[in-house]
Amino acid sequence: MSQSRLLDAIKDIALFALLIFLVSVTIQRLKKFISLHEKSMIHELDTTFFNQIKEAQRQAGLIAQFIEPTANEQETRRMQQITRLVQAIERKYTRNAPSLALLGPIGTASIVTKEQRLRRELNQALFNMRNLLHVALDEQPVAMPKEGYPSIELLIDENKKLLKQLQV
Image (cartoon, rainbow, N blue to C red; front, side):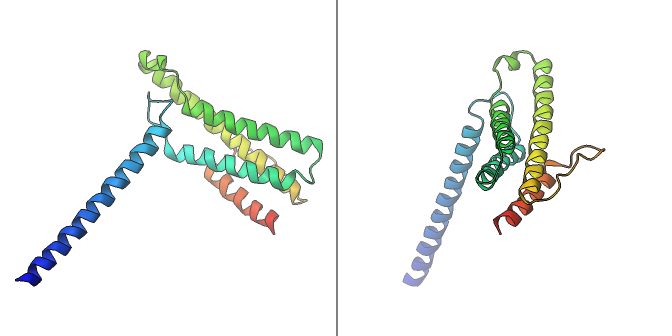
């Protein structure tokens, strides 16, 4: 009899621990959602695009560290422009004017076109980072493809590979 009570108590403790874990995960996700949408409660931000912006910022910082000691003035200026551009993209993406909500479909359309423009700007910044990495590796910069820029994910992956080459 006491053994079954002991097993029941262990089950209760395990279930209670699981409940606490699930509640804590939910609270963490809620905090992240609120912090991400703090300045933009009008629409839900795409976390994938937000993570891509953060990765581009991280890569820009790494590239600046590697290029700065050996870079000429023009390369340093280009890197600073790229870094400022990526920071501006994040700021523009996470902040929307509350008045856009009052415009209804027009406000929604303006948000969508702004996001498309920001995606193109991020794509351009990542492509420019890739060219700076090629220069740092004493390779020829790559010209823009006729069909347009590669996807953001592809550029992020290529920049990661080039950064690894630069680190070696």
